[in-house]
Length: 123
Image (cartoon, rainbow, N blue to C red):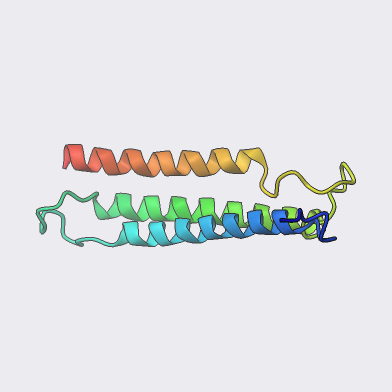
């Protein structure tokens, strides 16, 4: 198997990385919308659920995180010449997403997990 440089297209790996980030952002939006789903009247189901106000707040928070990550990826992808050249180093870019993007994504998933666990334990 030849490397992307041997094929004359060094942008393939950054493009695959961008696609995986895009899938992650889309799934974050799907999870946010699914988290909103539930009973409108608290106590109408035997399954513990977060109150509707908390579900809406979590949904909006996750949508904001997805928007920030999506905008960051789009701007960074445009800045690095669609994965071909990093203007700072003059070489193929090492990463499409900045490290802070991964920290933000992990913090959002951790917050969602804590809300879910507290809903089950307290509900």
